[in-house]
Length: 248
Image (cartoon, rainbow, N blue to C red; front, side):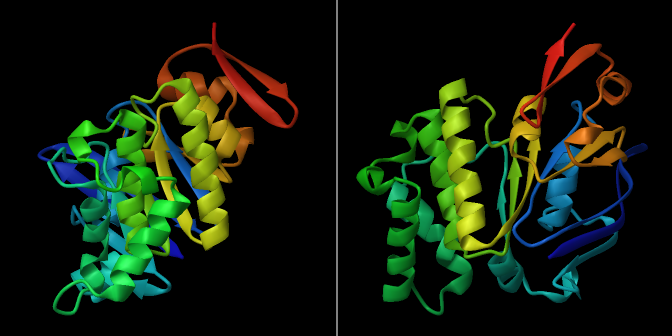
């Protein structure tokens, strides 16, 4: 679905990404973890073409920069950490996700897709509410809905559970996983929560100082790797095929 080869991004003299390479398969949830400044957000912005990185990005075997902006938006949906707060209604905000598909203006098919996405994300009852009237969890679902309205093959989600309480975190991740499997799309998700990654990831990429320190399944979430990357000692407890990470 998407492949990155030797991605490099610098901010002045600081190398934010330093030779990052990986691939994402169809229907896969790939979690990118690492401390602040490790390059997680820069990686997503590069994949979303918000930043221009050195190296190469391929989507379905084609260079990302061979696509027009609208063509790329039909392939890749990007949800940043902080969406804008405005006086748009939920329906209109999600309809904006259809913009890459517009010819002259929104048509019946665009409205049908928005209604379908609102139903999938349980947002029907909020369609006429303004974005600035929503809770954090509701707002996050609207941002995902707008990305899904693009009908992408790949979702890029930057810390989607940030600022959500544990109940909303669990509900959101279960819903997201169900959508990804049902719609047969792929997702790259950044998070600071190692336990969320261990519970929902198909694969994990662990970053440190702009480089991939380790990648694989939950087996890379070892006490040694976490100490090397985060500088903290933890206990890693295996339970029912999953791992629980507790600070010492």
